[in-house]
Image (cartoon, rainbow over all chains, first blue to last red; front, side, top):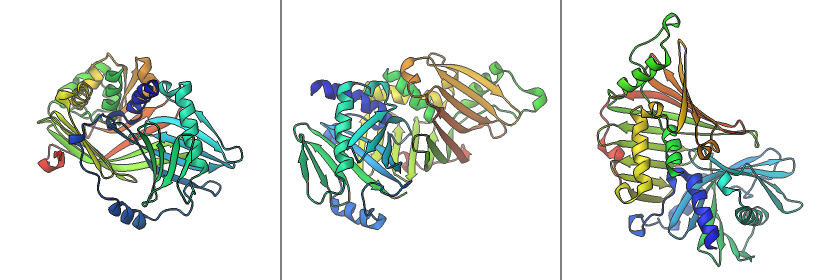
Length: 177
Length: 214
């Protein structure tokens, strides 16, 4: 785990460039209550399905990763192509972390174009499993627990994946483009 | 490595002032002349504000991600605000020794005096804004293409760590307006991020609140 975090830390530093820092708790603003987020989500309109289902359909998500005291942000663009979900994970400044393809028939995720620092077997393995769980179960109606991970939809439409044995949470929130 | 990344980001936000005079095709300046002109005119840039459109090409998805926002810079106090407004909201503010990053409902503030990484970010960003990104050659090989209507500074990363992100960074200058009007970031696989700068105003009074860090 420590090795994973040591590895993932520079990865997200790269991914988020200045958007990443281990911010002391005192320097952070309190998070606004989720009621606000729910209102905003209602105003923007959440998709009927979380990820695109129609051929050529595309969706964009705000992505956050929290581990320990670190808070990292980025974007994910997902498109339905040839019966697959194809996606790119990048930061707000446009720096790409990786591409992925998800085959719904096999439930498998393939990664490509990873940043060199991401291209390690244990990071790839974690990313594949996280993305597979997210992409496979996005339409869940009740929280799902599997392989040490908890997947849930939040009130504002966010899809949240929490590593139950690690202090790590990944969130996908639909953006209204 | 971190310095390299910081340099990379610095180039993302570089808004170098251009040469101090217009050029004709018959009298195009040489590379050294352009670099010197950039260096000279950089010091005269007291403030800058404008809008940007960032277009990210995603070849795998056969799509583009277009985001827009505003930028403010003030030389005094080393202040910069880089703000994305659509389709997502993300704000980066540098004010002296403090950096603020706001994403969604969360705001993080860093004191660069306590954080070596952000101190380097601040230093290199400001070096870029004052034109040293081109003249400091430790991170890039610099080549200048001088045209009648546009000057292009092509930066090639020297370090492998940076080259994994971008093979080239191209800064487009409008000699007449004496400003950078486009930044291109070209990746290994040919994908490209283009940042077009428009409605730029220089040396105007900018409200201090723009750079306020909560």
